[in-house]
Image 1 (tube, rainbow, N blue to C red):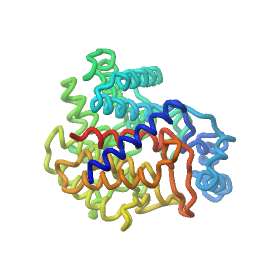
Image 2 (cartoon, rainbow, N blue to C red):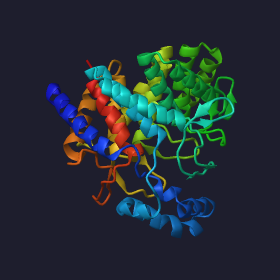
Image 3 (cartoon, helix red, strand yellow):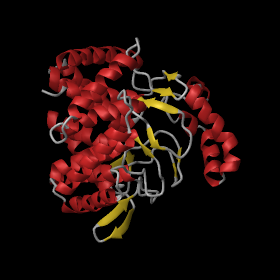
Length: 397
């Protein structure tokens, strides 16, 4: 059974590679409407006064949810570092499986693009998005480095260094680690707990952002032997664990009370990466409790992912392929410590390939609450993550 699924995944990836080779690494994006001039201004107004802003943002939400092709009026295709990093990691997976040098060369070329797009910070380098992003906590200019994006580039750099021994990748990873350690704002909550910001220009305590930082800094301490990295990571881990709800879930932040599928995966995978380094039983307990919530509350009876367990504003999202991608990679990561996690990853992969891959080779982005399908292939969300997730499964011996 598993052999049959693995063959199907291999064929699926082959079809996706052909499509990617034909279409390249630029794409439209999930946030095209919100990164446009009208989207930026409308969201600013909405966050200050919902009554005044609703007539602007609600039509954009309808367009995004049910008429996504209209985004061509608002935006052009772009390249995204977080998507590129997932592709690098995926192609290195394929290189390790098939020993075909072409995959290593593709990964190196993409990584060169990642390096050229880095933003210099006070202490190092980081990566963000090529558009203005308006949130409740800040208005982020284009290129603002985020702790939810930079780790993927960091991991891609480290893996390429391990494969090639080329010092430029190691040096760039050191710079990224300095950004993560020293360029974020820290809110001290107690002697053993602190919350790091999402970027250098805000003070938000987003749960998944702190989990990302902790996992990255622990790996950086192992690589570069800087004890302060480990100390900072421990403070962030305590923040994440102390904000876990009794049922095992996490809100997006203490002030932003929504729960969704892939952000839950982000927290779980980064906590578990931290556990693999420091082997703290408290972390593993938190992961197991969170995974139990994830399986019980974020999937339907037919095992399709539920995107929101708790929502603030209508988003009209029924099935997100990003949720599939993160669930698959999470299952691979947890396979040795949580019973059934890997089997569930295989199940998700089979469902994804059977139901949501299109004839062209790429995957549907989303199914709306009305059953409409968004067939625009955004690379940042979720094509790159799907590619990486499926290569993770193929990498299992």
